[in-house]
Length: 330
Image (cartoon, rainbow, N blue to C red; front, side, top):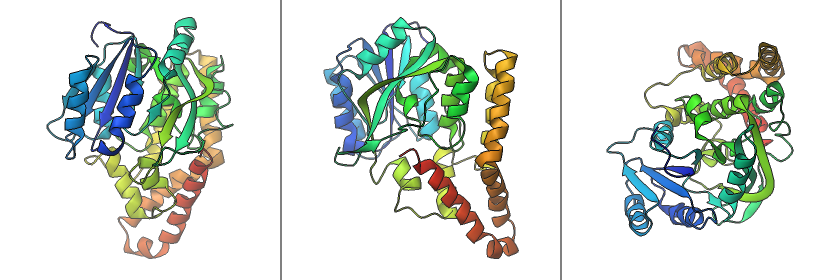
């Protein structure tokens, strides 16, 4: 990373985001906290994203616009904006979300006051394509991520129940640098958030100052929305979103392995690590076994004609269970 020139770096990876990009940029540039840089990495967009970004960059010196010659994949683009950053604090921004004017100011204030907090975010509203508030994410779910005890934070962040809203808050760049950032497998962002949670407290400001947009082209609508098809093909497409070159049938086995790796490398005591290992086994017993067994069935579907006749109804029911678990956070 470069030497720090600004307090906050905002990294905005974008691909064909013309529909909501202006609204997102306006909300970022309207922040009452002014000491930030905005790094935009255009992932070889084919719409008017480039023209929009160039126009904004020409009018505000805080904006640094980059364009990839070819699409490097969503995780790669998320990681790129971090590596291009220089601030003491870092925030990922999505090209379709909206921040209230005081979002940065209030998050930075918490980080300045309390070194034990590695990541600060606000209560997150869920808005539709027209910007209408339709609900609150993670309401009543992430109750212990601000705990002083790592294993309690870990117990809230493990599994597939919660949305990853905190990851779009403001965090310490040093903590992001020590994490795995975005991996090329489904739910890699959950592992990043889990790693940050093992490094320190995650503080929620209980005001709705950040809004995640749920629209027909969004990730959540495409793969977990009410109108999407709960099929094996949809699962393959979701895997391809994360990595077109390294598809794996054993997604949840990978996630489970990452749980153990995250604990192994965490800067916490051995007693806390043992408690975290216990939380992993509790997760496997509670719901994880469904997904691990589902991976085996998914693998058999691709290698056995007999399995194709016998397994699809069971496999789809596992995907349905996944949906039910994930939608508890909506």
